[in-house]
Image (cartoon, rainbow, N blue to C red; front, side, top):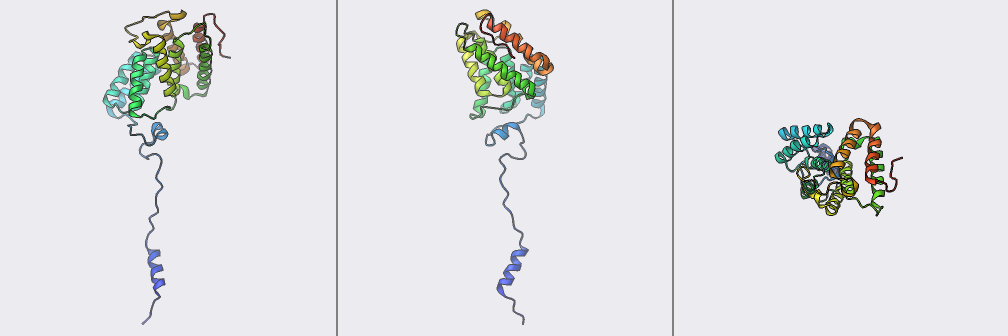
Length: 250
């Protein structure tokens, strides 16, 4: 009788047994490859619209791209009603409301965003500011607006309202939210529904009815005509200065 050493038997058994390698746990679930989840993998949020909500959301974005924030609001509001836990709809509602200077509604959307994800401070920029030329124009525009804020001779709360919008386009939610609150505090009429109330118009030389179209013109230029974007930014800065310090973009 042939005796096989015990160690040899054990070795054969080990070789014949498949080794289950431990898979590294991905930071982002493979079935949720979205920008929000990449930035905040532990956030318990819905990240994509589906069905009717998706159709309304996409239509809302199209309305924003064609320069119709009022129509965008209607579509985006429907999308958020159908799927309230998707942050994208609330984020673009902020932009639409900011363009119309309906800042109290923008605050409400921000509060919803922070309820869904309390730690969320930044999201990817809109497609408008994904272009390098627009990023540069937006950053220079922001610096021009900040320069105006330092001129204590002409404290204009509309500057904060414009900063709130451009920060929202950049995806800097916390900065946009803070500027929105400051604008309302300095000019309480901005807390009203802009479509119904224009109290405080022509404040310090440029009022609500003048600023909103200027912002929409700049948004349109950044989307469709890059050569006009910087020019339009300068138009806004010039309108805000009214003889104050020079803030024209280079």
